Image (cartoon, rainbow, N blue to C red):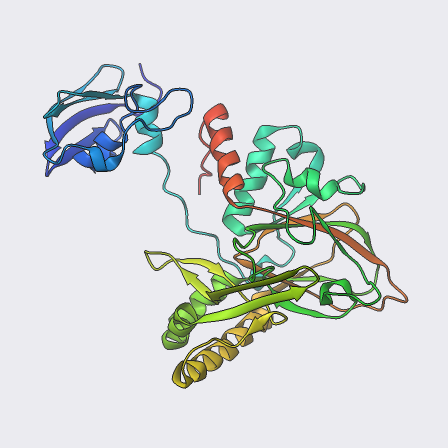
Length: 380
């Protein structure tokens, strides 16, 4: 008896293979795709997981000679013209052809006020299931708050190392967020900060930002957070021409200080090949005008003005008052953050921040899934 759906049939169809499982699920893959991902030791080095062939070297007249389904749910394909045999076991098929389709990001606005996902340092630092839940919330919602982070210097780096590596920049491995005399960045003052994403002038832009609260005064200094993806989707629906302008016309982002002169040109809204939103880049302190013709300049500024108005609208924003030990962790290419101003003569506020790259969130989730089994799907 099998405690999971098992592959029941495989049929050669339309230059590929059509598969069916015992629970009614089905999938189809082109012959070239199946041959290219063959997991055998001839095609893929068992130690490094690197491929021993190049896709360009696959036979141009590749075809399926024969398919078979084993009692254990494995698929075997014999190929023409070279007679190579590929075996895809049930676990491989489950991961690559039956794996859960990634849910779209859970978009939010004011409705997330008081409901930001939270986790506890003591759990995520010792329990892989808790670590997975924490990172899954980060992936799906874009923002989490880790509570009970030890109040130690550089501890924010230890949080990052729970799942990845520090993305070190010209500010070092971490940076101090507190009021400073002759501050080189508005973040290091008590001023109100408009919502923004960090380091759009860098290449690559860091994917995840972490801010460890060491000291937080009672008055002021609340964090303001906005789901840039939700706002952008609203813009796409209501103002398609403005949305298209922000996705097409690259702005210039620049940071000149000390030993660096960092510059990047990228659109405010970055789209993927499928038209989905991949990143938001907004930073009033370092954005410079696009280098384009007058018609595009007018289109860009009109679209940007409307987009920022949406970002600053009360229905888009939530506020989070941090306490010592809280560490908000958020998708820096999705969630914009800002800060309410405060009186530095009356309230002390000190955070340490760092960055990591997004790929390590996904990597850790895949490794935990491989060890513990796929993440349970909540029943609605």
